[in-house]
Length: 231
Image (cartoon, rainbow, N blue to C red):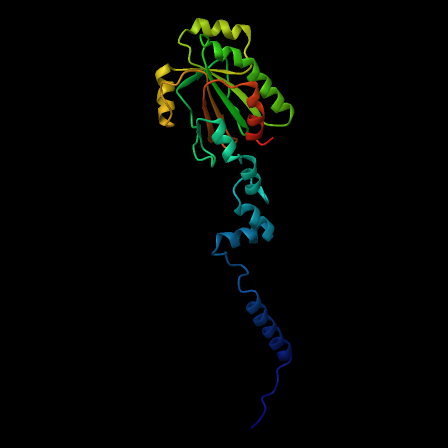
């Protein structure tokens, strides 16, 4: 059988064909869109580390979930002994709380512990403990705790409330719509809607209600509060 004559340059052409065939086998995805959105993200960003960061919820880097969980952990026995109603697992979102109006541009704390003090100008125990609550707040903040004190007044006499504000108060003030509105909120929490003032609520940095205390607090309670907020 006769051998066909070889055309000039044919060997080089065949070699080029083989190289092209090998390249197409190794890189089948070149020029094609990724069918998996995560794969597309890796291709666009240029690395797997970008994919990992994008797959996490906003604001949560490596170890972010564990850090948040530690931030809101409370001692179950301590909270049970200090609070009349308590939620150790933080499964009770505060929401808006009872219907109320913020006075003088009052704003709720965001991202830290919040102590809601329900009081009234005619409640003597409320007025007696209020300066102490301010000192508690100042001490915790000095120690690095993100902690705010909010004063939720149940006063229906706007003039009496304004007069008290003029004398100075240790925190921003909200005016609860009515005693009935506070009662409805307490009842929704499984507490006595007729509970007397003062009433205290502790809200964690995630916005979950952790503790509801019916009645006054005393100086001896400060170490408990300090431990509840992680200090």
